Image (cartoon, rainbow, N blue to C red; front, side):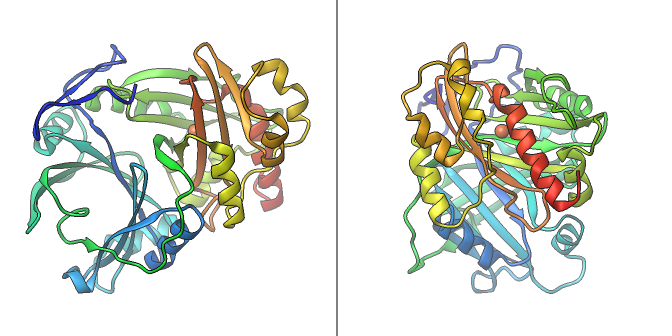
Length: 385
Ligand code: FE2
């Protein structure tokens, strides 16, 4: 599934279409990077290196001629994360973003073959422009970028880099560091999830369908995703080759306040809820991350009393999965293993999912109840349930 990209030469790609309901006008090669606006980019980058095993990649700031911001770029597998902090100056939108949302995801950047066409095709179908196509050059070549606005203050930036050979992008230099912790085995971004407001899920489904040609892969209603106290609904949108998947959550009525409402209160509006990153060995990845200080959601031990009845035989030792709190689910194509971190920000907003797919292409529906009961226990402690 991930070998569907055939590179014919430096500038031409053929993308196999896996989801026939998706349209072809916006070919996406993959996720290019995710950019976070944060209060202290230097310290955020250090956390992602030390705790999550990312590697130093690139830097932009005063030393590289960038005066309005400082950015650190880290990488692991195919994943690139950018942490950006504003520098003093009036009208710096990054300050406003951090004041309103706290640390959070600003940009979901998508790798394209033609950023000009991507902007034209999406804006003519109704997407609001963030910025029109622009070229940035340095000694390593040219990157063309364009951007559109999505939910809340979040944006997509289309990145065309077929004529660029540098470390990351013009304006950045290679970041050489003497602190290079081992990777923890994270490979690529599996999916990135939005929380949107009441009754807005269908609006954003339509947005991804109309302006970006995405198809609805699966829908979870409030009966699929509920506990005795709270509920939510979700639709998973995918592009044609399946490389980009965006689940979109909205709150649903329940006896108590759902995690989506808590997010919307603390993020002050819609935004990115979690980023799921894939590994080939979840036990090793999670035990490494724990040793380095990452906190994961606690799953009641009773979950494992019935899990084998639900998922059947699996290759992993169930006692080890239980020790780490790793969840298991099965669908028609195989099974998956997953675990969720506690929020990685001070506000109860953004978290990460670690996922290992062993055939399954679904999202762990069988784990929703246990997972959301675990989140409710955290909400109870925060006084936000
Ligand atoms: Fe997820």
